[in-house]
Image (cartoon, rainbow over all chains, first blue to last red; front, side):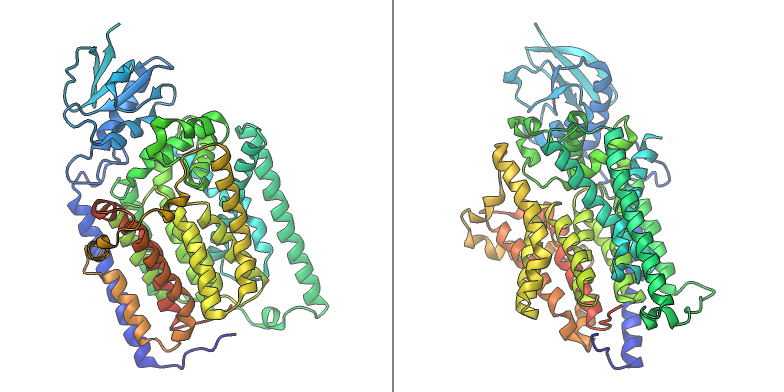
Length: 147
Length: 437
């Protein structure tokens, strides 16, 4: 059995003060942090990414759009997700997010040269000669490849 | 309902791992710590069962998994009951441990200790943070969750999906425990993967680690320090739903077993379970396992114990790496052998130091360092301290594999540094109250 520290009440008191003070500081810091991330504070959010930033996080939009598109698009369709002005930036944030939310479709990288059947456009319209608007849903627009 | 079932799947884990209660060292722990050890054993057993079924091409479904895991739980429960009976018979015949049977029960306090109340405050705060989407890891939606969904749909580890070039950014070679665990949750909820259950499970992992530390050290204020520090660091690092909470949980199991528990077979089993879980959770878990082995060799010069506790993790990790090779998946385990950019070292250290402040003047590090400085039994802190130093050093080593890792550090360091932070916290506790239960 390992030996114990000699009882030392003053040291123990210092230890307790340090730990309890730190715990209070961490608790206050947590509350301030949660507050700084913006409200509403007592509503169950729509997505797990709703309050990770003061600004709306791109993946929150991707979640909402993918969730809605999954109900509209046919099984087996190839799909990609992008923000037209930003692509290929945020590729992982956008198309990888859709992979887990659209299990009945095939989500691919943001390469329109591969002509995916559908493009989910976040935040802004997609202007591309090969695609036409298919539907407008919460979170963005769905474009279908022209055949 | 889907979310409740998805979360219930995690709550079933202690039942599946209850056989671990057979160990004397676990039996002597308070109930929350016993539940946490069974939680760890249950997760590891479940993920191994799911992986083995995949290996022999048996597709999962709810019936198969419930049957197999139910049998495991029943065997475990039987082991515990027969163990208790044997212990009871031993006591009656005078063979039992007198200190166990003769000592009077400790008087119950009317009010909970202040540290316990404050830990509860952090449970509530973390629960609030995860359920209002203020701590969620992006990686949950980028790769852990999608893998789980695909594995669930395929009824196994889906190598064809992992091989596709479109999904290379989702790290196909990452160890399988987290996607398997989420696939288990998906299996229980059936309808769809509960993303909310995945982030809420963070509370179980975080306070499971706290219960383990308290149960093994008997240090209430120390457990409060761990609870408050990690609650805050998880929030800053957006860890909820990612692989870091289970990683830290398994690491805590190994470190408490080696730091606070008596050197006996049971503590080796717990340490080995922790290493297996860590190595199968993240690549960083493998480096943690190596750090623990090195620490055991450096501090205790006990190569037999190092071999005993690390061999199961080496076998598990080896099996996964073999699968990665045979399935022709993108493999990053050889990343350590890539070129190093020593020019990037100063910038890496500065950026890491900035990130390590956790936006609170580095308080998460300052308190344990102060406690270490004031503690009298610093020798007892040696092992976790060496692990802290090695795992922090390995982080730097990995970062300088890029000529400019600034973005990588900013995105990952608050979570990567949780391992050395945990080890430092345990070292700080050990320097005050090294105690075998």
